[in-house]
Length: 374
Image 1: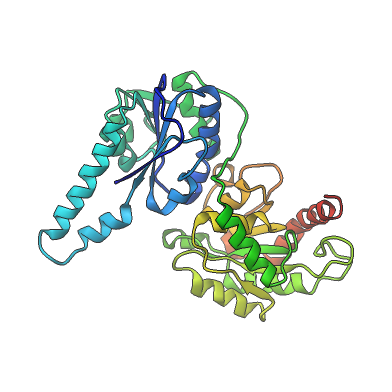
Image 2: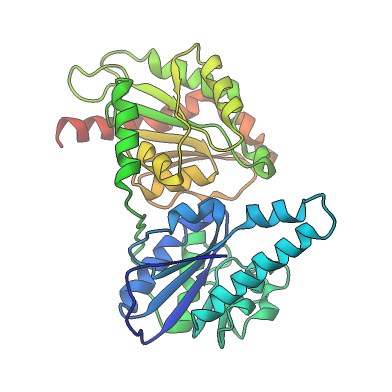
């Protein structure tokens, strides 16, 4: 499968491979680990294996020398081919080429950040002599059996960012810095800026709502009606409320973002808002979504990849948690607000619009201050 080289072509002292295939939020939360690794090993050749769905977060990344894109969508399409034998042959070629791409990079160390069977299979396919992963009980699907250097995270239930960073201890690397670096795309920034300008939305002048989650994580969703009411309430704020950014600014507006398969859900939120919310554009990449998020005053969503992406861009988030543990999955950083209601306390349905508005208020006040004193 695809391998894309970065800028470092000279001989490197070490060749290190990071394996984090999915999901989008977890790939985002691997970025501090990548930053710490590059800081500690400036001359190393660093590769990264990622699935096509999250590849935008690594392609063209300034800290990565080679990106190995595992084309999972093509593989699934091949396996679903109705012509007998044809799909299996194409799938075999995809896997063969991907393994060859990994082997030709001659990695010394491969680190399985994925922590399950599919990550372990890529670990073995890399051919690296040192195979680092989580110890038994900290990964899934017996992934610990495929590694020869097993790491125990620093605490029993660490945040994903800290859990991933702990794997670097196998290389003698430790540190408290947590930096999120994303690839820079002038085209994505220009597209986001143009779309917002055409609709009269200024940076810091809108709140971004993301109602979707993966289908598998649909139990984490906040009700559409609540998102719609939130947009209505934001539109009705008094001129002197925190929903106004800067002296004499227009009332804060809301933008409803969506990803593949989520447009209908996003449109339902716009309808429930009484058309007080705008539907975001069909973004062409995760980096376009990031650029829209970067310009928002705040971001509101359940535990989902776009929330972690917004946090990585420095946008303050109100994160809504039901079944998942926010100690592990919350957006990284002190500027965010987490509203959590586990199933035994009513789950997502027990988080009210008033709760979200109260959490948003200090974030919007900070955005207003930043706009008034840039």
